Length: 131
Image (cartoon, rainbow, N blue to C red; front, side):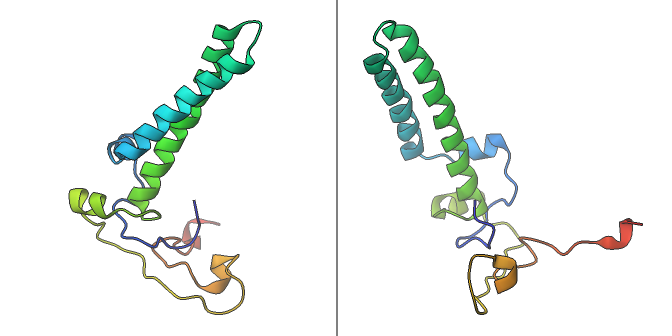
């Protein structure tokens, strides 16, 4: 995920797995089914001597990829890095939204140097507890 401030409204800056799965859309689930089924077909086509065991292994790998994709999309939507209009209507916005800053000057490769991150995204370090 990008390190700069999100471009959309933040619903939850630190969602857990259950919230991420609840925020998945039908297109996310269809993509996961397509990845799993496509990986089974790939394993069946290219696993010539032992087709079914190769297909099952490929499907297990595809399902792992699909589950990570589901969690990534749901988490990005809740954190505001993807379009999340439905989630904002369903769950509401987080009370503390990051202030969006423009790029100061120079490169956008390092958001801290450009001033593109706000205090809500990356708070300043508290050095009082360190000796």
